[in-house]
Length: 191
Image 1 (cartoon, rainbow, N blue to C red):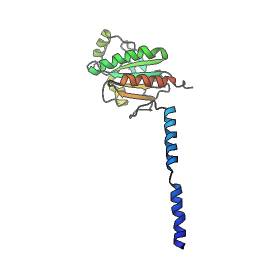
Image 2 (image 1 turned 90 degrees about the horizontal axis):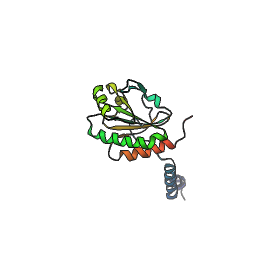
Image 3 (image 1 turned 60 degrees about the vertical axis):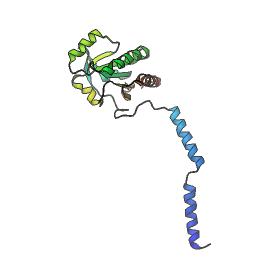
Image 4 (image 1 turned 90 degrees about the vertical axis):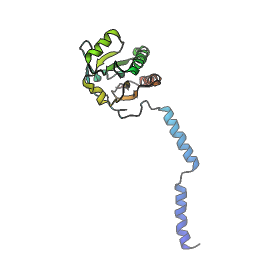
């Protein structure tokens, strides 16, 4: 054996030993899958997921104040809509069903209207009462802060005030929202 072969042999042995074996790679994947299964993600990806819900004060049709921070310590389902949005009617119906299912478990439902004119919203509310807390988003301040580019849209906020799920509402969103609400409700209350 030459000197050169003695010098290169240990380096190649080190490279070979440092390379993960198929067995260790499979073990790592199984471990990762087990961790994911035991701690499933409760939030959706998006620019506002896991950020604090913005502190905004709204007015109800009875001119009462409602702040988003008033919802802290409760799980909240917040949905944005407008009277001239065709898809919003289906989302409002879904929100009413979710309200009937989850309100008794402590979920607060906040319906945020995005009409340009408050009068349009008030006239609609007079004809279409809801079990949700109904507010109007003056100047679309809340909508801008959560970067909701499309209506209808919905958020789930956990007991600490963190946005855990958001959706531009689609046909399958009610089932997804129900799953997310159930998951967030299972978390222990914050201390």
